[in-house]
Image (cartoon, rainbow, N blue to C red; front, side):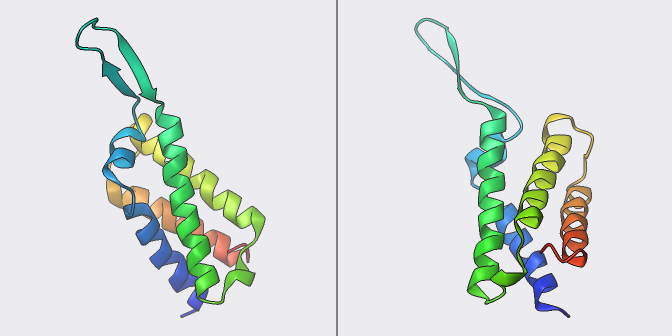
Length: 123
């Protein structure tokens, strides 16, 4: 098996499940806090900002995995951007729009995206 393909799978799972509780809870909904005295509600974090942090962490794990393994020359800017954008959109389909309801479908989309980008020579 190609080391690059193994790296794509392993860094995917590490990056996707490394998210903390804050990311997992609020990447699909706004964090709104209510003042107990006035009752005024304030949005502390927008969902899309939290999701961007998650995708940034996910992408960083892939880049670091490649660089630490000596395979950094396989990464291309278009591959990194395409992987990050499709990860973001897939998580929107799952978290915000509820069109992807099972986690295995979500994971299959992420891994298929990476496999296609690897096949193209972008990752």
